[in-house]
Amino acid sequence: GRTVAPVAPRKPAEREWQVRKHGAQGRRQWRKVHLAMDAATSDIRAVDFTPSRDGDSPVLPELLDQIPEDEDVSTVNRAGSAGGSNS
Image 1 (cartoon, one colour):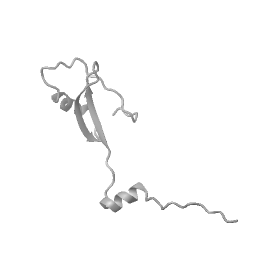
Image 2 (cartoon, helix red, strand yellow):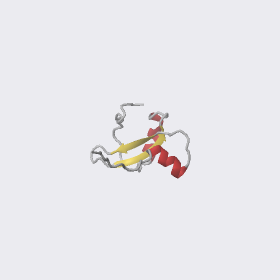
Image 3 (tube, helix red, strand yellow):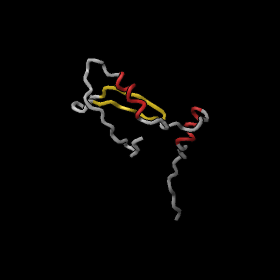
Image 4 (tube, helix red, strand yellow):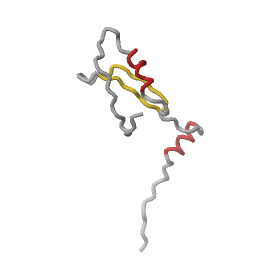
């Protein structure tokens, strides 16, 4: 006897679909998100985005500027990233 197997139409790869829909794009650029959190409440107090090649230290003043002056910041702590890099 013959074996019959169902054949699904080929689903284009994600990148192929993106190029078809949006056109060819340049190299993907990764971004870092920097968060200032209240350790007691886990509330996010400030947010900033930078290119992945930029370090973390230069962002601190911009994060602190987002927090109202009448709110105390008693400690600044640097937590590691999900990717394991602390730069």
